[in-house]
Amino acid sequence: MDHKKELKEMYKEIKIEAGVFTITNQQNGKVFVGSFNNLKRLNGFQFMLKTGTHMNKALQADYNTFGKDAFVVEVVEYVKKKEEGYFDEKRALEKLEQQWLDKLQPYGERGYN
Image (cartoon, rainbow, N blue to C red):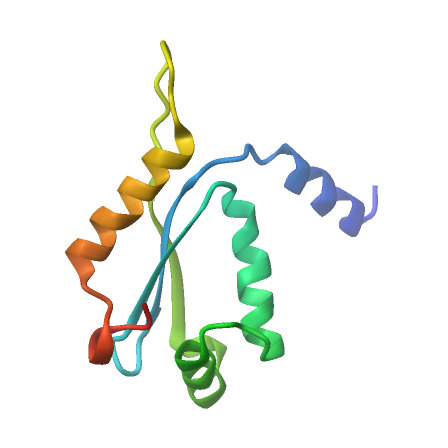
């Protein structure tokens, strides 16, 4: 099996997980807090930054200035699904993201949110 095909297969096998992530600028300490119901979408998020098409103008400007290597992307917490009963993953993800926004306060000079 060629390497590309092998990577595609590995990607497909990754289970879909919801969670909160941060992107930290190591040059100035600013942080962006975000979330996805499918963390595989982080690849697209990073692709937009690389191609200069990200909607967050401040984050994009710093990415253009400092470059890819100045930023660290980290999944800070996954949504923990309940085994029994009704579970609203979207609501749980919103609450989790808000907790991280409250904790890190990534606004103004501290961040990109």
